[in-house]
Length: 201
Ligand SMILES: Cc1cc2nc3c(=O)[nH]c(=O)nc-3n(C[C@H](O)[C@H](O)[C@H](O)COP(=O)(O)O)c2cc1C
Image 1 (tube, rainbow, N blue to C red):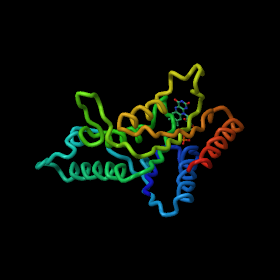
Image 2: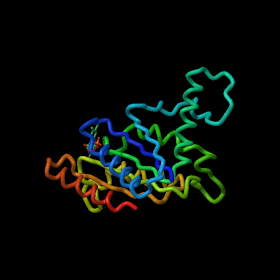
Image 3: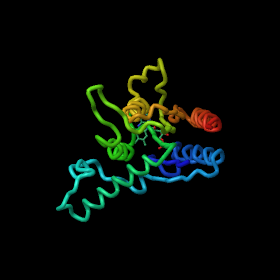
Image 4: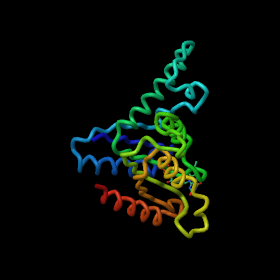
């Protein structure tokens, strides 16, 4: 089994999501001792924003500069990591109602027309099915069903939508929310997420 472990929090030692992704991967490793883990820290090693060169993914670009070639190689590596993984653990804090731009840059590299999704007369078809994504969601406020801020959730809903579009319908969200509500509330939220991690199989 191959596990891809992604972190995208910029808050370093104070991060809520980073220790939780670590714990989730450790739990999976405990259950599947033979699992191979590939780790990507999208903050330590940021990816370039999607651009005209990356748009040429898979095409032969004879005049590519060494920098452009390197960029394309990175894109291929990122895609290969996702294609090889059976489980992807994604640390996804909410920043400004969405996901960190570092994580968006990663998604832009894995959403490749003709490779991870395609359009046909039957509509869009995701080509990354058969794998599971575990999203570790951390956020300052609360956006649950019925809460006044529910419509402002462009983080979890976006991730479910984009992974679903790519064919990954098995998306489990483990959430620590209300982190901005004081230390007690934060501790409670983190403990709740840890309980969910304990249930991973
Ligand atoms: C740049 C930034 C933007 C944030 N924007 C939001 C937001 O829009 N909504 C929210 O509920 N919390 C917001 N927060 C709070 C974070 O979601 C919360 O602190 C969470 O724990 C972040 O995950 P991390 O600790 O792993 O970085 C923001 C935090 C930062 C640093």
